[in-house]
Structures are given as structure tokens and as C-alpha cells.
Length: 429
Image 1 (cartoon, rainbow, N blue to C red):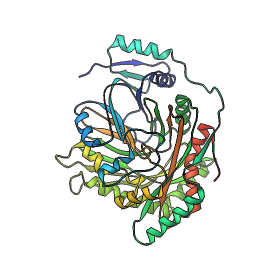
Image 2: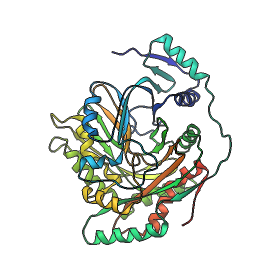
Image 3: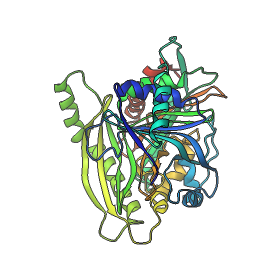
Image 4: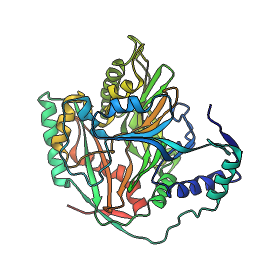
């Protein structure tokens, strides 16, 4: 068993910020932060920071097979990009990509810092842990140096977006599919960004249970995700798809009303139930017959910036199924595709104007005993520091009952927190 040391932190929140600033001196790190979210089914870890790579894989083909070989009996952190769909099905991706993340990247970290309450555990002996603590404690936490404004251009204009929603609904009426997740990119070129400061602001604002901050060379993602993709614990699989979003109110009374309205919204419930059915089918591909169950259906949860409708689906893994195949069989997640999955994956490529890449992919970790936990990469700010390319994306499920203008408004609602953090506005088209 690897040696670890636990020490008590006098100021845990300050240390977390200093540790992120210290991590940014390395070429790769992954932070997973539950923000102390109170729901027991949400976070496996409270705060986890993996830094520097002893071993790594970066793949753009045969990625799932490579992950099977790489992750054997070691703890690794990494991400899976949405466009791995091209490995799970006969599909392709040909749109513009200003970020250029690999399809799959995982690394075995040199340092693993875990914080629970005020206790810090490090995968090092005591003398080295104390030296690391001293070095990190000397870090300066990034502060706002200026009020640089960003102007984000929509990849798809509002006019085209509204037109596309009508076309999608026409296909739904013709029976091509039932629901399609349609997304848009908002981007800026030649953008200067203090990425550490940006993440700290976004994380403080959102307090999302599946927040993550990933650096790979010159590429960053600041993720404020409220959604779990898939978790494995022993022989149990758990997925928690989100479908249904409502704004936050100004008072506790207004929030209760808004939650009730979301819970009783027939359109939002129909969207959620459709994706739950898809997730059940995905899990069934890796599970023992009769074990797929819906533990929670269309339950509304309150977050810092929005209310969300979440369902929880569980199952027992079938004997002999490789844990990576559990991920592959559910990828990409139904909440970011629609139903039926293969048909909508083809049509998403037709309607969208950008390559999703890591957006609507997943970030997480795999342990030495092959357990894992992965989020859904949404509510995220992406930055390629070399190209100075800044991007944020948002979307929503289009159904027969969707109102195009309201779908556009939902995108802007999901973008609101990111725009405030970036001090940005969206160019009118």
C-alpha cells in the first residue's frame, strides 16, 4: 500500500486556493471539488487534486482499448471527449475546433492531495508532505488585476438557432427521433485570461457538486457541473441525468414556488423521463438482468445559480463485464444527446456548427480497484492559452412541445453565471 500522510489544516479554504495556484506551475493537473454539497448520493470525494504525470495516455483512436490497458491496478485521472462517439458508433465529427483537446487523456499523478473537512491527506511520507505544505502555503492567491471585458460571438446565430429548432421539431413530428440536445458555442479569439482566477470565481459562484479544473499543457477547462455521468462502486453503477432547468428566485419563498413549478412542468418531466429510459437501456448493456432500477425520478434540486430536475438510475454489473466497457456502453451520456441515441448523434452533427470536444464529455478518476466517478462537462469555460481561444457552450433538449424562443432563453440562463465570471457579453446577431 502506498504511503500517505494526514495533517490538520488551519485554514482549509485558503489552502485549497493556494494549492490550485501551485498546481498551475505543472503542465498537467486535475481538480475535483464537490463544494461540500449536502446530498449524500452526489460526491464520492470532498476535494481531490492530482498533479503532474508519472505515466499518461493521450489517444485519438482506439481510446477505450488503450484505457483498459493503461488503468490496470492504478489510480488515474482524466477525461473523455464527446467525440469518442465516433468509436462507439459509425459516426464522424467535421466541425471547427478551436481548443484541440485529445479525445481521451488520462494520467497517473505524482501528487494526490485530498481534503476532507480540515484534514489534508497526501500520498507522501511526513517530511515530504510537510515540505509540500510549506511550499503551497507560500503561494499567492490570484486576485482581480483588471476588469477585462470579453465579447463572445455565438457560433450559431439566434436566427439560425430558432430556424433549426423548427427543423428539429419537424423531424420529431415525422418520427425520426423523440428528443435532441441542441447546443451552441460562444467564443472569443485573441482573448487574454487568468485561468486560475477564472476558475476560483466560477467555483465560488456556482458551488456545483461536480466542479472540476483541468490543465493539459496549454489547454484548460473550468467546469461548474451539477451533473454526474456515471459512478461505479463495487458492483453497483449509478447515473444521475439532468433534464429540466429553472432560474433561481430572489427569496426563499420564490425559490420554493419555482421548484414546485419545475417539478410539475409536464414538458420538463417528459424530457427527463425520456432520458431516464435511455439511461436504463445504456446501463442494461453492462448489468445483470432485472437489476436496473430508478431510485429517484424527476426530483428537483437547488443549486447556487439554478434549480435542476435530476433522476437517479442504478444497476448491478454483470459478471465478466470490464469496467471500461461500463463507461463505453453509456457514452456519450443521454442527457447531452437525446433519444434514440444513435439517430440523434447523427443529427446533432448536422445541426450544430462546432465540434463539442470535451464539452458534454466527462472528467473524473479511476481507482486501483477499478471503481470510478465521472461528471458531465457542462457549465464550463474552455481556454487554449497558445491560441488565446476562449469558449463557453450551452444547450438544451428540443422536443415536440419546445418553444424556440424559450429554448434560446434557456441557453442564455445557463450561460449567465459564466458570462458574469468572464465579465462578458454575447454579441447580438
